[in-house]
Length: 503
Image (cartoon, rainbow, N blue to C red):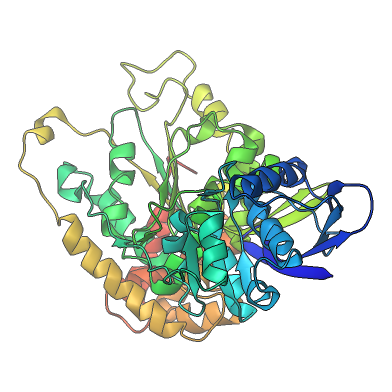
């Protein structure tokens, strides 16, 4: 008799269905696992055997063969323990075979038979729903998987609980979704003294998901401004929260199975490797750009990152996804993020201050900012010089709108964009528009077109730069409640594009 159970193998955020076949046949006693298992999967036979012994279930003196189908798909991870145990229990007629075949199972077994939580319960639940099956997982992973309402999720604490559930002795109640968490912002824009133009740039960038470059001397407030971006961004929509949580599930970042509606804000250190930023390493895990999906990636001290790391950002910025190619796998992750970069104007940081600048000015500035290639710099929609704040301004009372007021305007602009791009796949914010759709929504009036043409010719804007100005102008028009793009909107967009600090 060949018994069947089902589990998944992860390829990026996708979970592919894997059939676990178990045959108990005459022959010398053996327990083998075939079908391209890695070390963790191969060791499952010892964990399963010991867990069954703890339940007083002895394996017969026969040959046990476990086949993981499709056999040419690499199988990685300890979550294969539970489906292997289920297939074996069904082959020994301890649990009903039809009940086992009706679920997708994943979970790691301890030697005493208890189930250890594993990564990827949420993507696995998505696959189970598509296959019209239930999901069986460790109890600690049930709250996370239960967010997929299209399938029944059973969270078990141990293998003995699973046996009692399938034999009808003690059915397990379906798991309930975890709590929805929304972290209130603890940093307000009103904490920033002065820098009104920088605050305006933050609002525009947040409204249209535009990439932003901040250049200024040390202590001018670049990092302080960037840290307040989460407070002006709207909460994740239901679809965005599910996308983001699937990536976080693969990295074990979901807190007690709860779905977080706050947009991600990732700030890697400039010593981070290429694999840490774009993804890779063992099992091709997602990197910081994917963990920042639907949120913000803040890269402080931008020129200090390795040149190869910076250049790898060029394609993901344009496409919104990253393909991690390895010898044995090609894994694709989404990475539609808003890049915010901060940099000093030169190595010493005081190029604009004759009293504090080093002797190599202005060559040091050219060398330092030259670490950022022209094609990468061209991908920033907004470039802004952040001047130092005078000491006298620090004693002044807070000025300008607070984060809640700015967040309301940003949310309004994003609602306009959501209505504009409703039903159009791959289009959510103005930063996503291109080609004919961009011309349709962002063609300026006659005066705006003439201004843009003159400036493009005078300063040699690239085709990419030209289109990015149009996208920013469209966002400014949305913030201005304007149905069309007019000359003032184009002028403001150009003012952020032609910053002398980043040119």
